[in-house]
Amino acid sequence: MPELTDITIDKEIDARGSFCPGPLMELIRGMKALPVGGVLAVLSGDPGSAKDIPAWIQKARHEYLGAFPEQGYTRFVARKSH
Amino acid sequence: MEDRMSIIVYSGTVDKLMAVSTLATGGAAMGLDVELFITFWGLEAFRKDAYKSNMRISKDFEDYAPIMMEQMIAKKVPSWMETLKGAMEIGNVKIYACSMTMELFDLKLDDLEPVVTEVTGVATFVERAKEGRMTLFI
Image (cartoon, rainbow over all chains, first blue to last red; front, side, top):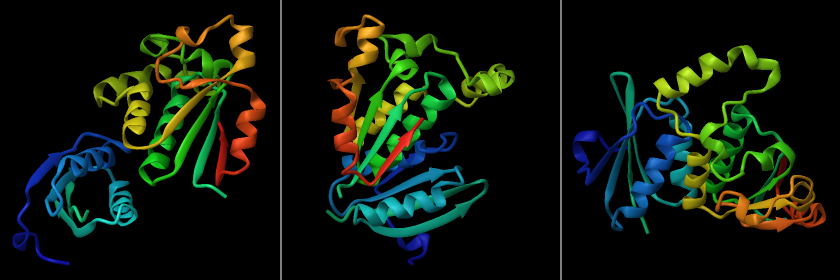
């Protein structure tokens, strides 16, 4: 997994305060809107996201760049592969 | 076997409808076709605009109703209908209204929320559900 400082984020969505399945929905919508090769970050405070977000990224065959914990939330980063 | 999640939506209380819409979203997100068969109080909940004023909660937890509604507003939890519309936006979600309940309550497709796909009988639902991966009754 790369370091957060090595990644250029093209778009960041703040889904804090939104609960399951909210942050995942934001990620799916955000991915749809992003051009191929773009990097999306979603901020989530929902404990379900830690498993749900990587599971969806794998299922949708995008590239998971990692989960980066912050104070009270996590920044999930992925690159759109197709 | 097909990648399909079928849900029989029998209940019309907000807590159970939230479970329906959340599960439908999970199914749609993970690439399953999702089919809801709405019947009895579940169908009643799909009457046009009914979701806007529906504050019903399961009888066995009715003492929680005020606090739950309060929390939903405070935490800006989207309504179950909003969540369901989100599921329809990201995946293949179809909603079938039970023809028997439609007769019983004297309803036409036009009386229901536009998210409802069509009216079908139980046999059609069962026939399709048997080919699917999972069937839930809520």
